Image 1 (cartoon, rainbow over the protein chains, first blue to last red):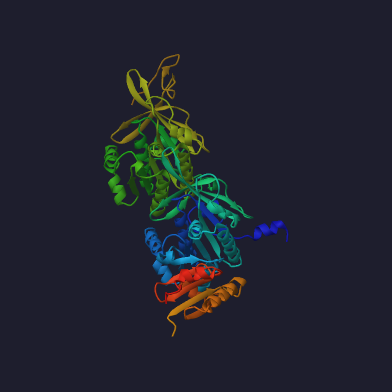
Image 2: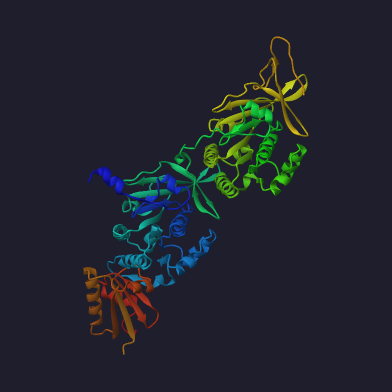
Length: 501
Length: 93
């Protein structure tokens, strides 16, 4: 057998942990042991439990949980909050605890002479045979070392257990403690006996914000994605990995055009937005970003499509009042089931958590259009890197669902300028529309231009627009005026001709 | 009927198992030894017992009666230490 064939012969077992199988190129190496190392509070136990829980719920694969630290009763209670009914699985023969947690009687134990951990191995193998387990979790190895004083002996014994497990068709997750987020893999040198596969969970402080990540350090003889990926913990879903760069750019590109709700803007875009495109609308406060969002949602409703808006700046009442001020009835759209308005304060949770919740909401409501007003508000709760990852991930997700996305970004200055948001995400979006204040003859007017329209011709003019009780009206281009986007409009040589209204 | 009940849990017929068994027998055959019932269990043939008794290490010697229950793990090479740990010393009959 050539080495190439050996490589192929290592199968992967899909874990069912959302996102993890993508960065693991399919899952954990099948019938092998993977070490999951992390500092205190990095969700090791949760990862181990979820590995078994998804095995049962998604693949009907029974699992054995060996606990060295927490009592089984504590684990049952703690995991119930993720919706995992461990007692029911135990009753159904899908889950067995091997309780190796510290007991009250432990102080009555004396050590005289040399021993081994054959008792533990026997119990683990007995439990595996009893329910024909395919998955095994041992949590955590550090606790074994603190129970028994002889480190060398324990290391040898754990090596023996790991080797014995290799002969069985069971895929194993062992957890171990780390002293710091970066440095040696695990305490007590446990990686030495399960060196084949190592996954690291981190819970690091970055600019005063906790940021959880997961990294696959190595899978011996199998492929995986490299580097750290964001990870979130949600009450209903448990651990979710956000795969980012593992996301493949294989979205189908659609030529179907949809109406953005304003005929003139459709014309400026060469016939409307593309079905599966992401459009960024950038402008200073009050230039009409929320107005464009409102038209976008109403445009969807008029074509019989469903829309969802995530509003991070205004309350429901404000949004509904704004819309009715422009002649659009959000309440009726919601009653008709073609709109869902989700209002949230950006600060209530981390960006990764927002992402998981937004994805869940989109999967539930299945909209054709999604608007976010505004992305800049979300930027406040994240680090620049975290924000960029969020936008990439969200963009990729909605493109996969063939949803049209409209995001708004707020520029910090009233005249001209670009927003930080724009700088971060302009390359990710398919189209960019700029809204700008134009100061002319002692008046504040508003200008709109399509800066970029991927895959289509578009109007290059900067046009004036007005807002009245029926919404937005785009008029003629500003003629013979320069410097609008830079924030200082000047009449060019020749006669100024401004059309109004 | 002996008042003291001991159970010795072994895993297979290894050198360590044999040493542990020999050491317990030697302890019980001392002239001043207390009368004991000794039960020897191989957990490889009865793994359910290992689970019931919450065993991790082998060999494990458990004094089941009289209370309090005591456990000693290891090959039991030091007779005096085993006797002390189980509370089987002189005058403790």
